[in-house]
Image 1 (cartoon, one colour):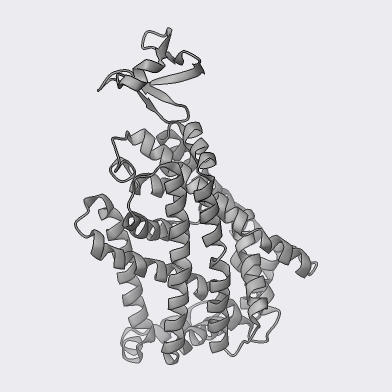
Image 2 (cartoon, rainbow, N blue to C red):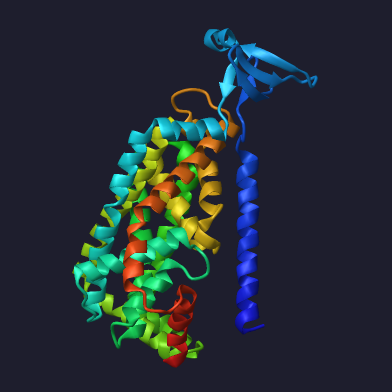
Length: 392
């Protein structure tokens, strides 16, 4: 199967995976508030609130009112559902505003990093142009996370400005990869602080495995001796579109001779990723999370690895499912007891709050896109970027 039917099938499969993940995420969370009438008792759902207290459905199917005094005296415990958790975001608007403010710093830093990586390829653009294209790519990634993708739109615009099209497109995706590696390196640094904390062991393993794979792959790729011994060049020459593969290989290999610039780009990446972690941390604080700072610094790289590697639009369901499994009751309920359902509900609200901050922060990209419109539909931009390989 080739061409359009294959693309349609791939998109359908990705949507099915996303739907399955969303169904899983929803099943783990509490959609409505519940009440635990006594220690160890099964929670019963809250039907509605009345002046006297909360109306719940008892085990025998009848309705009963749990008086407010029971909650104050500790005889009954109210467990927050998604509505109550989200309401905390509104009450903690200051945390959301702080998260948005720090998120807005990410694009300027990312624009400087991308400008630096392009310059290594001999492609020079102004900071303002780099910022415009960075915002446009971010806007499409957040608001239109379909098959087009913000990276393809960004690649289309930069490729149109240079004859070194393969190199320009390569740098777009290298820029994204460096950001992911930088995030994992921050997570690895946090592992030193959280080494004995069993609550983040799964994230430590994911981050460690990813960095080990990058270290091995990078060593093989950039070592003349290992490339010859393993026949890397012969393998690349045997691939389809070998001319384009050779140009991409050359574009990546040139960074071997610009270690200082790559290190500077990594420093910018650390700053940008720290802003992302701070935004998530502050969204969590607005929800009443009891997680410590290093929980976010270790868990978020693991979430972003899954977000990047699982091919569903916008990582829908991937980030939420990972957050529910990594931010469990022992992490989020550090300030007091919390049920698994409450933790899953808060983790879901954290990711939704973070997505909301991203949506708001990337809105300037819509303005830049409308100003720069070329008459080419975004869906066609991906086709032209991919066709560049065939043309080569």
